[in-house]
Image (tube, rainbow, N blue to C red; front, side, top):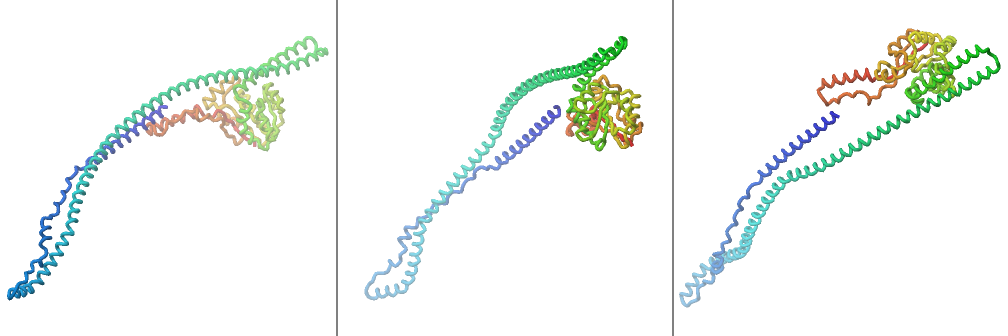
Amino acid sequence: MLTEEKGSAAELARLQRERDDADRRYNDALTKLDAAIRKPRDAPHPPPPYDEFQITPLNERWELLSLKPEEGRGWLRKLRAHAWAMVAPLFERQQAFNSALVDHVNRNVVMHRETARALETTIAFVREDHRLIIEYQNLLILFFQQITPYIDTRDRHVAGLMHGLAAGISALGDELQKRWESMVARERRYDAQVTDVRTTLSVMQRAVQTLKRELEKQGAIGAMGAMGAMGATGAGLSAGAQSAKADAALDSYKYVGFEDQFRGSEHDIRERVAMYVPLFEGASDVLDVGCGRGEFLDLLRERGISARGVDLNEEMAAVCRQRGLEATAGDALGYLLAQPDESVGGLFAAQVVEHLEPDYLMRFLDAAYHKLRPGSTIVLETINPACWYAFFSSYIRDITHVRPLHPDTLQYLVSASGFQKVTVRYSAPFPDEDKLQPLPAKSGTAHDIDVLNENVRKLNALLFTYLDYAAIGERL
């Protein structure tokens, strides 16, 4: 949770830095844009209007031939005619030039008038457009300057809405969490009550079955007593012995109920021991010591491997026989010693050796070596006391446990009894999600993280390792 809060704070700080940097770049760009706007320059004045002052005189005076002298009489007439003949070509050419020039000037007067008016109008338009552009740019700068406050206002509004929404969600989450915790507590109470009822019912069922069998035996004994086969003293001793046996049988069902509640259901046990079935492939006449309810015997039967079981608890053996399995109630060592040498095709004992005294265990291993066939396998599964959780949770819960066996100890004892290729196979690993969790790599310094993670690894190896193990050997 602390790591998540640190990560969230770092993310918020990163976003704030990005926002500040974006604001700085925006303000810089706005300043440059404002500086780029120049004051409008004065537009050029239109040129002066076209000078038409001499247009009228030119049109009145261009015709020179109108000055031709009048005709007279006598020598004066001849003199005039002779003189005119000499200058007339010059006047005609000059008049032609004057005519062309006046015509050209007259035709360009209108064009010059329109050009002047067009220049004046264009300059006025350019001046107005320039003024409008400058005004637009100023308004654009003003608009850009108002964007940031507007966005900030919207951000504050959205932030307020988000804060209210977050508060509502938090309140709803708290309420849901309270309701969930209440439901979980209620479910746990119901589960505990159901477990208690199931345990009580299981114990009662075992007691009824035991009472039924004992009553049947007592009925048979009563029938034999009615035949007068025994004396009064002998009859009294027999009745006492039978009563003691009945009391032991009546108590045995309690341990069956204990197994049902704490070791696990038949389905759970089948899943745990199924990993050992391949070790007995091709074998026959496998002996399951401490067969319990017969989960492993049932698995062997499904694989076509013949097997039988022995259990000190009469009630357990009876449960196996009810399921069609071959099982005998008796002492494991005594049963094993009664078998011919090299007659047993394999030996399996799950959660048994921790119930045995050391000298009994040594004799049991020696007997197993002599009774197993060459090439057969022995598997001894027990609680792993090297796992503190397994020791303090599973081992000390069962009052019938005598002594925990360290994996190295059991491996050595099996090897010392003559078995070869003895290995240790760990099982029932502790769930990873329930172990101590290492720190993420991003938090703290690298050295601190390495030290802490190494400590976590050591604690996990010490406290939360495998809950069970099995010593597996081979009779050569």
